[in-house]
Length: 268
Image 1 (spheres, rainbow, N blue to C red):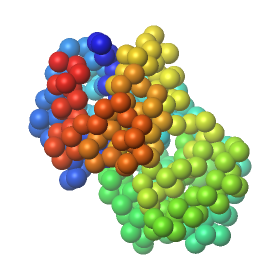
Image 2: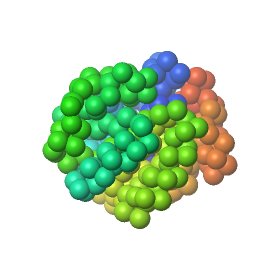
Image 3: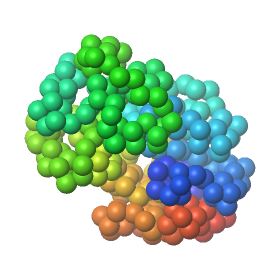
Image 4: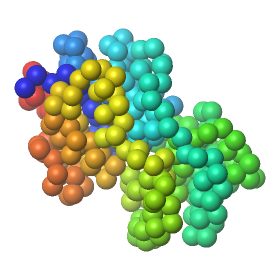
């Protein structure tokens, strides 16, 4: 099979445990792009948080794509045109804020290049800021601050507690929003029907390709939909057990250049 699209989650997949792309993985991906393979970076991160990796892999030069906010936004990285975008209904932001107060959890979202939240002194808020290399802006009133439509909100907290909150928030909002954890400590709240598989379907239609042309690699809960959807779904060696269970192939870990191994095995 000659694959034409390679979709990569970032954290735990493209990057190693130090959040870096190794030289071996970078060279493999540059060579794949020179061969004509479209590389797509698909992450729960905001677009701004994906940019450093897209630039490092020269996606603009090779016509690659960025799928951010777990699929709520799909961007042609060469032209910077958004070929797909879906946002949370503005009336839901207030309801989500009330829910965060009920459960005693910080809620955050994104305005411009900033992460905005009322609670900045929180270890999980700091993790989100560090991962995306974005500044956190403390606001007095979250609802009044989020005036521009946003693709997602994020509640953060300790994993065992957040697992319980996830069920209750899903019960309250699941008929009209997508609610799921991307990490044990991150509860993503997305527009309805948005996940990586759905948005990759939009991208493939734009490219005139099918899912059989696509390899998708990931490790986390939010990668499961695209791994099940892709022509070849690949779980990293460090992936969650359920991701491995549904994958067509399990590669090496992110600290063993698992992505480079996939490129060498299935593209070259």
